[in-house]
Image (cartoon, rainbow, N blue to C red; front, side):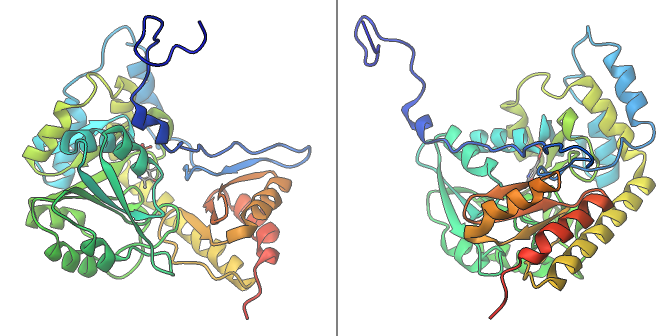
Length: 368
Ligand SMILES: *Cc1c(COP(=O)(O)O)cnc(C)c1O
């Protein structure tokens, strides 16, 4: 008998019907490699540097004990983070990347019918996490200069809102919130709404009033910070990120996490990375300088770009997105195109960034 739908004798297992609407997570593509050109991958906001000193050794020692489960209590990492952030370990919840932590948070706080207010366009994992929990996403369009529309986000909060997410700097567009504007915004949000501040790129912010997430956490009982070792720390392949919040919120997120989620090499590498703060800061500074050169090069060609505060630059290319992706491809660089909207270029090796300016700069839409 063909098919097998329905509940008759021939019925086959079926996933939840609402998962049919699940948006895909599009991973950044690897670059093509034409002969004679070193290929570069600028499509996933990865860090171009090798592991920080001591990190590979720490991870390797942990790999050697692969017959054992990792420390389910994530003890050493929680202790190191708590010391650094002046929190107690119970305020933390780690996961396989902060993306996993976000999924756990949404499923701990939202069920069917609950609403989650998100900026849009923003991180593509948000609508997936919301749909998986059976909740309803309430996307609030960015402003014309690709910033969060905080006014409209506050207005979007209803009785059914359980969680609200801000992403600063915003992936994929780049602008970062100011502490003062976020603080004023939070005054408008009822304390029963959990406000998630996704700080995946916080280390790269260089404006005068950066968001002080830890201060928000000290002052408000409904704030959770999401942080990751994937971007500034360069551990994307090991999968480790965390939430910092109140003991109660962190405990709820821990309660729904997969047992033994964060591998021993990931835990060890994260702890060792925290010990290499000076070199980390140097590398982040170098990437910020490269970012500013990339922005200057592109704007010099006539591109008008939104504020770039992460380790990436956003070209609002609209209908010409595919053309730009193809132009980067011809110089052996993969970038991330969002069909019909724009192109996100990760700040990478200086040679890669220069090649991007040369290839995409001249494609600027002439103003006026
Ligand atoms: C990269 C990223 C994350 C976290 O990624 P993980 O590798 O899962 O830790 C979270 N939020 C945003 C906006 C990101 O761009």
